[in-house]
Length: 185
Image 1 (cartoon, rainbow, N blue to C red):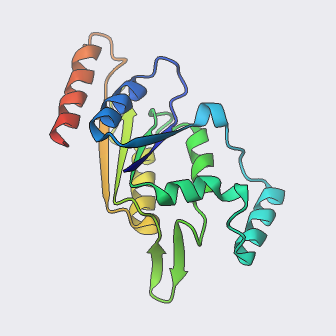
Image 2: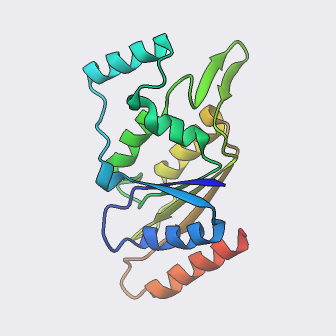
């Protein structure tokens, strides 16, 4: 089983990464990690976008520009670890997603609508928050992409909230998140 781990944890002592490590251990299998803080995918500019569009039109999917998309489409399970930042997630994750969203690799347009081409049937989205928030646009965005574009229907949210609230027991909050992970397996 191929597990793709998309690590958008920027901080070295990331609480999101702690939870991700727990779930990755539970899943097992061959884990391939994309550490976005290390690979630093570049945002598309007009030159890059023109090149990619031309390559798509030519069906030249062997070009390295499509490596993230091909890796994403081939994974059996996908784990995304992204701390909650500014009602969403770190910008590096959005840039990575732009590299993944390639028509002809992760989805295609048909006369019946969008057809997902991803092998994965499950994606785990892990996030941690300093406060409490009911407006998590990050998870909502990922879930919408999975359901509508990639056709990955099983999208699980694992989160730990209130980690920076004075008086909250951080270890207890993380333990409860781990207990929730245990219920998923």
